[in-house]
Amino acid sequence: MLKEVYITETNCITPIGFDVATNIKNIDGGISGIQLHQDSGLMKDPFYASIIEDEKLNTAFAKITPAQNYTRLEKMMILALQPIVEKSKLDLNEKSAFILSTTKGNITALENPTEENIAKAHLHQLAKTIADFFGFATEPIVVSNACVSGVLAISVAKRLIQSGMYDNAFVVAGDEVSEFVLSGFNSFQAMSDLPCKPYSKNRNGVTLGEAAVAVLVSSNKENAKIKIIGDGSINDANHISGPSRTGEGLFRSIESALAEAEINPNQIDYISAHGTATPFNDEMEAIAFNRLGLENVPVNSLKGYYGHTLGASGLLETVIGIQSVLESKLFASFGFDELGVSQSINIIKKSETKNSHYFLKTASGFGGCNTAVLFEKVN
Image 1 (spheres, rainbow, N blue to C red):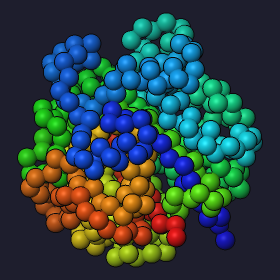
Image 2 (image 1 turned 30 degrees about the vertical axis):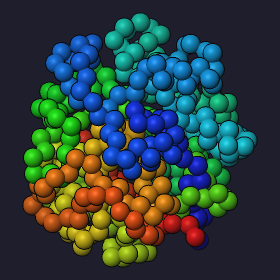
Image 3 (image 1 turned 180 degrees about the vertical axis):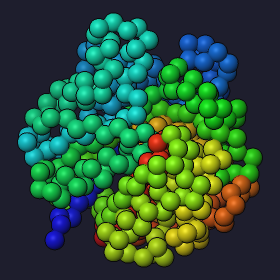
Image 4 (image 1 turned 90 degrees about the horizontal axis):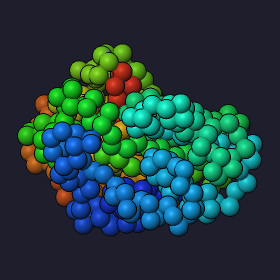
């Protein structure tokens, strides 16, 4: 029998809060981090995005260390992970894994392509920098698989612990809004000219955001927030940037997670979906959920609060989803108005109280990647 695996600590650094409690308070109050920005250094025209204020970030980081030689993303990640490492009181020895998840990492370093900056842009170097700050004894593990990276890192941590290689895994995920990312999505004509509206009839694209998130995954049930009971990750190989029109990869990922968890679709109480507000993603998800008989399960996208935080999104939305389950709350899918997908799904229109036992987190990304992870409330 495989080891049981839990998430025991969580933390997040976002534009609406530098800890989980503040984020939940602001989500509950309908506060979004998405604002109109006019920054010609990032984009010629005004754009909507969810961006952390530099002054707040630097002030918070200065309380941890006076060191100045860290990039903006590194500061975000260290701030996210530091309270978890401190609170865990674990020895960061050979039985404690360190997993870093990101899509673009220190991509902004390439704006000034010196030898040192080019080195910083390598993901393994980013992981080593964070690992060295805390003193991890093990070689860092990098998970970078487009926009499923954050939630996929949970799956990787779970499997490594079940294999017996580690007892614990510290996971940190992060990405930032940059000129490179903005120009990339803009070239696809995928960026919304208003704050995004996942699953809505009048949606017209994605809004970008940034965050850093950290969790402790452990075989030790003490202080467990939630149990990880199943996962699946299937690539549909449909297109470099477009998902399968039948939701095949997501459908099979959820099927795989359900099979491992040994539960039926009708036992799922809540779905935290990807919901980017792009026409193809939202439609694909609605089709996949219907194929599995999940059309009546309450579902939300948190992109209306945070924008799409790329490799951090799956882990950030997992952390908020865990807190939803713990507090018996379902948060509204912010920005939703009228259903704009062909299949019926149960979008959470306003925040409500609900006692949830099983919770599903899904994510999909470029290159056809899809990941689904199932969680069970710990009694």
